[in-house]
Length: 162
Image 1 (cartoon, one colour):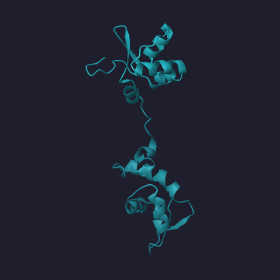
Image 2 (cartoon, rainbow, N blue to C red; image 1 turned 90 degrees about the vertical axis):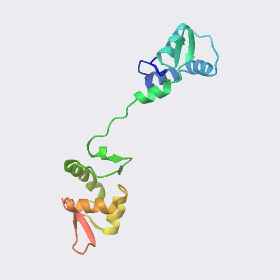
Image 3 (cartoon, one colour; image 1 turned 30 degrees about the vertical axis):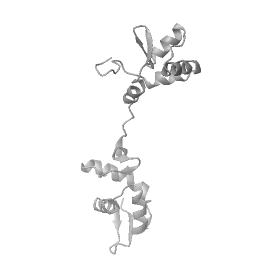
Image 4 (cartoon, rainbow, N blue to C red; image 1 turned 45 degrees about the horizontal axis):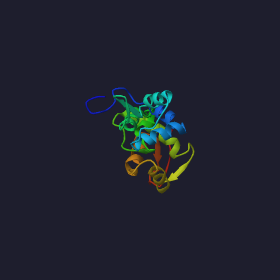
């Protein structure tokens, strides 16, 4: 244990789930949570210790109060790659600062917004862009400025430039 009472070794969420998948180990763990000291075999004892659900406190088994928090902290989500790293729950939080990243984002978005031969009114385009951002005018202007959308001179319609 470290000075904050956290385990020194990493806690595996897979080991916790494997232990809790066993109805017998689940019952035993529940008994420990309720403050009991149930009788268990050496194998059951070792599995509960190996899972980090319990700690050995001088021969007495006690619930590891930090097991779940430590397991979650150690479980990393895979980092999104490509243009998807600029989206949070499918929405743009802000345009990337680097131009190359902005271009990657636009190249990712444009096929989802408008087909190669489609023409959209500004209202239709705004509705499609609203699925990705709260700042529709900014994204619409950026797509035009960067050459992904062409706009009719009167502003009545948009079509894909590339």
